[in-house]
Image 1 (cartoon, rainbow, N blue to C red):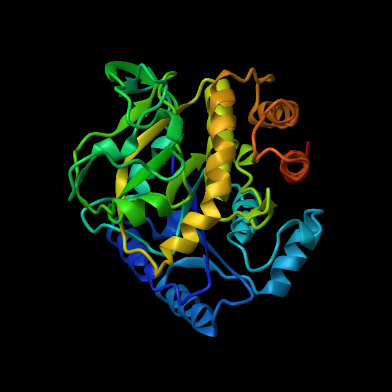
Image 2 (cartoon, rainbow, N blue to C red; image 1 turned 90 degrees about the horizontal axis):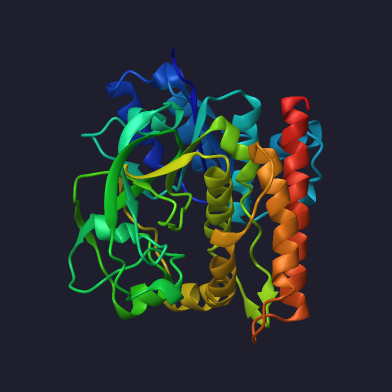
Length: 378
């Protein structure tokens, strides 16, 4: 069976990265199997539209909707335009919904600074999410958490953790164990060479760069949770109703938040994958992460409140008892469990406004589910 994939990204730059994806798909005979959705924002330059037009003429199937076209699409599926804010990486939600609407077998989320490698078939590696019952090496740990950066050879001594890895689980002996079994992969998280995806604090105090991948992809076991980002991540179509990219840019206890929308969505979707007995693979394909310019002091400040709330949420989430047999049912049950959970969390960060933010998030999750149901014709 020929599989169909959608690539989703958003950008406020000229997306030169798409030239490399075009080459990778062309060299590996996947041009007919891939549809790219580049979602512009208000600040996206005209060069982005020109590049998409040129790549389309060369054979890459690509959609780059104007802001007006995006609004028309949202209205068609019954979402108000205010649901997805401007000048935000939240715009990638439009790409997810477009890909979900077009019936893609699987969806790959990328960032505009993650480049495919010439020695890997990017499409084929991510298509593992559509394979059932494959034999894989499964990792578990004593701490319930697996550090995916341990799969990378880095240019510094010491331990580096991925962005979103809880601080309460860092610098502990994890005692990893491995076994082989047949699994159904529903989500695949590719890793990164050059610049690993770490938080702003890590870039400030212990910067690290990736030299190489240690060579073996793994499946996360029941006792091996990990953050999942949007930089190089794929999922089978069924997962999308549980993959709402949550809104950022709110003040929590007076602290502005940003850069963790994908971390929240990755964890919540991961809980749903586990609930429906799917599996998550981490490792290949690799990308060359040629990081866009960052102000790491600003990044660290904007991430801090997210880090604080995640300390409590991630202590709770692995034990949360979701219900239902589908992704839609599991995600909806999670939204209600989340509302109850935040009412019990204590500490400086847990103000009424912070709890209100998560209640609003739960409402948006249910609105997302309703939209996906409408697309599916429920």
